Length: 248
Image (tube, rainbow, N blue to C red; front, side):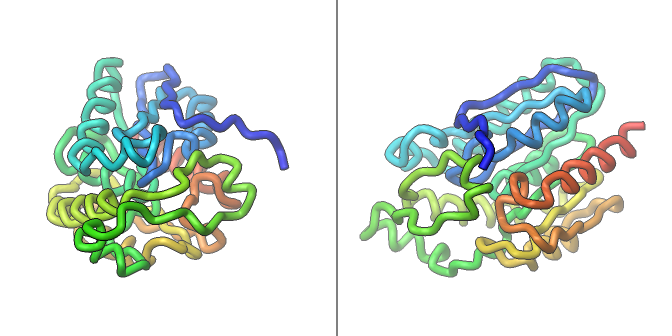
């Protein structure tokens, strides 16, 4: 297996007048987005992947944050990119980052949104009980590991604060209420072998946003962390085509 540059730190690549804001997932870091960021850097885009509050540090620090803290990290990153005097700005997010990208598209001016494996329906229904479970259980240990090629790009916590799972479900409910306000071009990406969310999440997003320019694109061989999975090259090319066609 090849050596991978793996770091939880945010990355910023200055480039042209079209910017791309990349948002990582729940308990994740920008590391899972670095190959995508490098691809768009090489294509001449300005790229920024922030580290969301409470992530990339420790489970104890994450436990002190709420979804509103994660959202504030997104707003701060948006403002940083806007300060670059860009002509166009697109936002793409993986998993929870996909939900945050939709929230941003609903509430701030962007030229397009690309949610990837964004959760509306979570496979593990215990997540719906997290608010109650957090009174009795503080953490859930990480017991499953992905394919080594995917693991090589991740900087995961060894345990997840149950309190933050409850915050994730609150964020999802909040985003569901905002979907009708999303009116910009949307490329909704969904992995066909997603082990964490139900695939009908993509259909729900498609049906409930108000965009007229919208599409669901399926990657049948990929799992949840689609940005570093086996079809990532095709994924990057499709997103770049989506952006290029709407920026011309």
